[in-house]
Amino acid sequence: MARYTGPRCRQCRVEQKKLFLKGERCKSDKCPINRKALPPGKAPKSRPAKQSEYAVQLREKQRLKRTYGLMETQFRNTFEKALRMPGKTGENLFALLERRLDNVVYRLRFATSRSQARQLVLHGHIAVNGKRVDVPSFTVKPGDAMAVLPSGKKMNIVKDALQEVGRSGVMPWIEVDPDNMTGKFAAVPHRQDITDMADIREQLVVELYSK
Image (cartoon, rainbow, N blue to C red; front, side, top):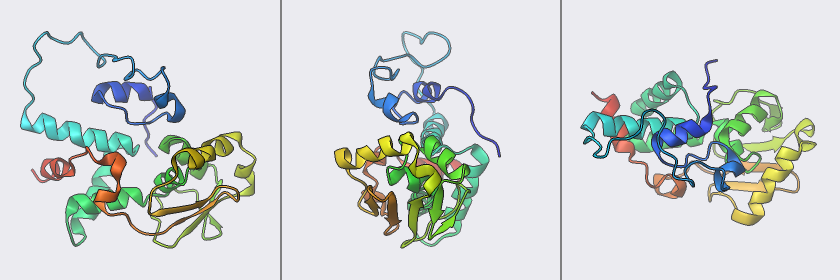
C-alpha cells in the first residue's frame, strides 16, 4: 500500500495552512505555520504570479487529500464513488471521507492525528462491532460501534489522546465513552456539520476532476 513517507510539516508549508497532520505538535510553537515559514523551494518572488483557474482547483484538491492522508489513487477512487452516488458529489465526497475507519478513530479522540489513527488500525488495536478491523479505508456505517482492544488500552498515546474529549469534546455525529475507550458513529454528517473543513471549497475539486 502506497503512502507518503516524507516530512508532514512540509505538506502544511506547501499549502500555507495547518492540516493538523502531527497532532499536538500542530498546536505548539514548533508548528512552522505558527512561525510563518515560507513554502518549500526557492525564495518567493516579490510579486507572486496570479494563479490560474487550474492551479486554484489543484491546490484545493491537494489540501483536502492531504488533510485526510490519502494518496492520489485512493482519493480519485473515493471521488469516483461519490460521483456515482445520488445527491451532490462534493457532499458525497466528504461523507465518504468521514466514514473511513482511520478518520472515525481520529474523530473519536483515540488518536491525535489521522496518521496516528491509521497506525492504530493497521496494528490491530481497533474493533468494529466487536470484530478487529485492520483496514484504514474500511467504511463505517451509522450505528457501528468502535472500541480500543485490550492491546491498545495499555498505550499511553491512546490515553493521552482521549484527554482531548474533556477539553474539546467530539463532533456531533460521534458518541464516545473515554473511560471505556469505546465510541459510536451515530450518523453520516452533513456538509455544514464538518466545521473544521468549512474553508474547503469542494466544488473546485469536483470541477477539477470533471475536466
